[in-house]
Length: 178
Image (cartoon, rainbow, N blue to C red; front, side, top):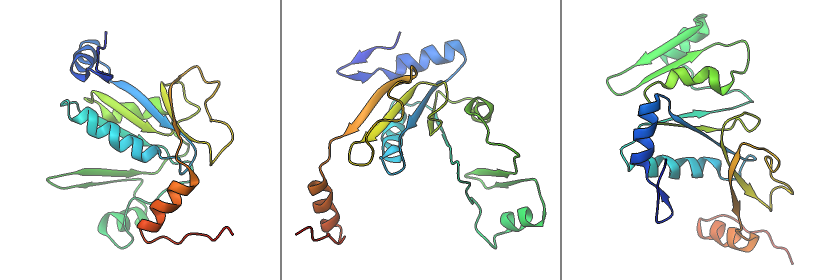
């Protein structure tokens, strides 16, 4: 069983359990666009990595994306008709592959073999444990309020005024509401 130490998960115990069972912990971070999902993902990755865990991530994008840079060799391979294109260096490997449907999370998990934890940003309708990032100023209701797989809701209580002050400090323009 995972231990809680001063409000934190004892990841080393969790890691040993996962390796014994042979499967990684899978957790989806969900929420509406702009709610802060990526920031939460970054913080989780940093925290889990500090315990020596191997973290894999999957970002679900229902709108499509372009990973390659136009004009680069691997992009040109795809433009010429390659169905799969892999780019490899001493530091990274990347793959772009044409698909005919949106893949479920379970179908992508084998691509992340050997991980202790797999964090997925998205898959809000999936059947994996979820953390929802919710901001009241953006939406009336959380996406997963009635979802049995929801394990934790992170609700941003940041007020509009504080956001405007933060934006002003960064050089953003404030709207005059007078």
